[in-house]
Length: 401
Ligand SMILES: *Cc1c(COP(=O)(O)O)cnc(C)c1O
Image (cartoon, rainbow, N blue to C red; front, side):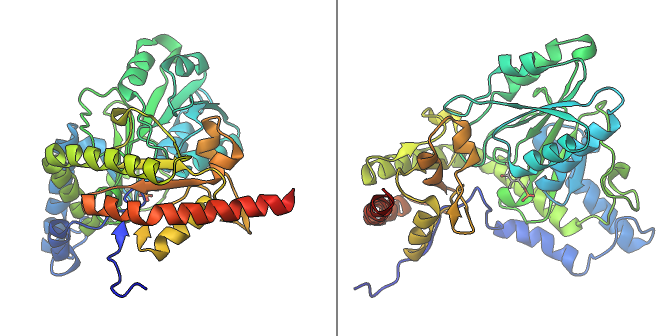
C-alpha cells in the first residue's frame, strides 16, 4: 500500500519544456504596460519596436548571424513550412526537386508530402541502422533541378545527430547548376549544443521557443543573407521583411531571445550534466528490461543530449507510457494508437527494425529539472511494468495463434 504519493517526474523534454522563471519575468511587461504594436508610430509603438529589435539582435548574437537574417514565426512548424513550401515556390522556375530524409519531424514531412501532391518531386533518403544519413547519398540524389535539401539535425524521436557541417560543405562544393540550398530543422539541438551560423554551411535553419525553456507559439527561421527569401505563406500587413505577415508576438519573441541567451550561458554546465544523466538512464533501463533495444546511436556524442529511446519487444509503447504515467513518470511513445490499432513508429521502421520493435517504443527525454533520484525512481518502477506488459503481450499473441 502506497501512502505517500511520489512526486511526478517529467521525462518528456523533447515534447516541451517549462518556461524558465527569468524568461517569464522579461515577458510580463509586454503583456502589461508595454503592450504597443511594433508597427505603430507613437510612443507605445516605438517602445515595442525597440524591444523587437533588441530581441532580434540578441538572437542573432547567440546564433552568430546578422539580425536581418532572423524571421520570427509562430514556432518551428511554421518556420519549416515557410522554408520548404516558400522556397519551393520562389524557385519553381529553376527546378521542382527536393531532397529530404525518411526520419524528418512531421513539420517537414507533411509540407514535403504536400509539395509531392502539387507537382514537385521529393527524394526521401534512407538512413542506416542508427539513423545516420550518408553524405554520399545526399550527393547521389542531387539533380540539375534540385532546389532544396532539408535535413533534421537532431532527430526528435531516436536522437541521431546528423553531420550537418559535412553535408553542407559537400553541397557547397558542387558548383554550377547543382547548387541546391540547405535547410535544417535544428529544434532539438538549438540551446543544447553549440551552434555557430557564421561557420555552419546552411542556408535556412528552424528553431522553436518551447523546446529551449521559452514560451510556446514562437520560433524563428534563419535565412542566410543572399539566399532567396521564401514566398510568404501568410498574406497580410508585410511584417518580418514581408516574409511573415501578422502582428509580432512581442512577449513571445522577447522570451525566446532570453531563453536562448540563458541556454547559451548554461551550456557549459548543462551539457555534461545531461550527458551523465543520459548515460545513467540508459544503464538503468538496460538493467530493468534485459531485452530492451536502444534505438539511435550507441555513441552518446552522436545523440541529442538527454535523449533516451528504447524498443521493448512484445510490448506496446503506448501501454508502457500509460503505466509509467500511473506511477507519476511522464515519457512518450512514437508508436501511436489509431482506432485501437498500434501503428509502428515510422522512424524506427526506417532503421530497418521489425514491426514488433517499432510498436514497442518509448522515449525518455531528460532536461534541466531532472536529477539522479529520478533515475532511481525509474529503476524501481520499470521492471514490474515491463514484466506485466510483456506477459500480457505474450498472452495476446498466444490467443491469436
Ligand atoms: C517540436 C518540434 C517541431 C515543431 O515545433 P513547434 O514550435 O512546436 O511548432 C519541429 N521539429 C522538431 C524536430 C521538433 O522537435
